[in-house]
Image (cartoon, rainbow, N blue to C red; front, side, top):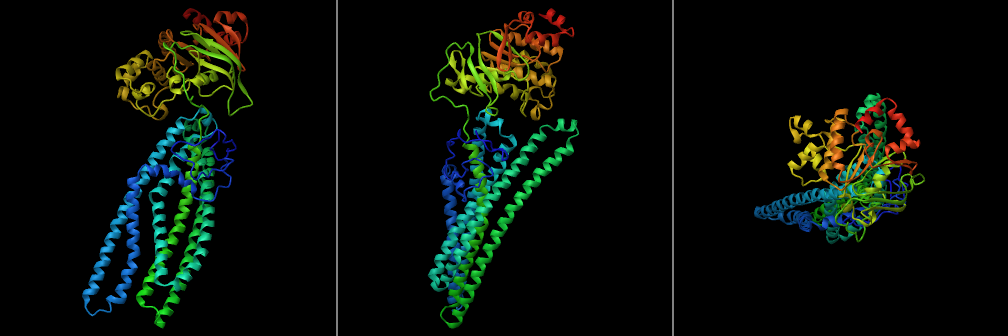
Length: 628
């Protein structure tokens, strides 16, 4: 798994493979995967966009036809000018001159119409391709395993999804067509120059290598610096994303100035990198224009001598001069376009890195079906596991446990004991290094992820609320649910009362990350999600931790009813929530060190008894005993 973050990209690329639809054509990612590594010096990464272009052949064909028509019309203009000068002005009848001007007007109309069509086709094509690309990147990223997000910042990923795809849109939507148009004009004009005057053309041909070779060399440098600028901008975006999400914490600690200073430093670094890229592009453009138009001046001087000596007509010189201007202008435009394409190639390179990331959790080639009926048996057999981001520190050591259908098992232990890791392995966010995790007797690695996760409902301690309506947030666990089913789930989770008091009821927007809701309200929405999913396995991570005493009793009753027919595993930080569990497992350093009921573990006098004394010695124990 490779880290995309530009300052921590040493991770190997061994897990990577090509993403279907985004080919390996022009793969310019450095073998080390390091952002600071020297990229290959070409615009080949843009070749990755070919599969997207092939989806819209008609639009591409229309753009090419319009582009070719505009280029041909432009190349025909000097011929008309030559005939106008050499023949039109020589005729005493003004009809000839009028006919030539009518012809020029017709050509101008054709040029205008074809240029307008080209613009429409290429801009629309760029918007369409980038929309497809963004959709594919988003879909791909959301399917990557959590280990990818353990080492990559969300702001860096967002930068690739937005800023880099915008650069690609510019390349596909305008820059590429301008480049192709100028290539046609350049070579077409050169061909007509040779046809018009081989002698003058030889002077131009001598100057071409003096322009092209530096152009390529400068282009390589531009691409390298543009990639560095994009990485610096991604760093700044990552920090901004992290900071804005923690605004309240920053303000609570008076950290606004420090945060602004750090972001200002990141932005300044991005500016310096961008300025370096702009400087390279400016030098590239200035050098190209100097060489190109210097050659034009030399050609014009030689041609003027030929006209004075009578070996060339004024119309022929005008024709050659116009073709020279077209050729020179095209080369000059190509120098600018080359810089833009190099910059877009850097963006395509970064998008390619993202799309070639493979999830560390592989779908089985031939998944096994779950048995019917699905009862929700969960088993761990000699499981050893360490997080990929911390391979030297084991989270679980030879863990073995079994949870029978309909049984409620609570897991307690000190922080870092491995409680949350058990949930992550059941959901197959990670695979164990050795041992097996099975559901209903089938190794989770032999089940499709959809089939496995459809059997599990989870209520996390840190609830995720999306910027949508309350109805949509509850229905997230079962998108096809009716409003009646959503309301029934909310009633079971003791959420209907507060939802109904809101002005817009279930259609009330929750704000970003549920900012308009209290902690207890967010928790009850999460419980309603789990109720609505109606899965045979229920995972509760201190599901009532954010509720007040009254709500906790009501929700606990709803959860008790929900757990009666389901396999339930509860991570408990407060022992008051696990007194009714069928079994309590005590974890310490990734091992089960104690197992039993509340009473038996208290009498045993181990870790659980110590935790119980710390939490219950304040007099709460008497109340809990009465409740029990």
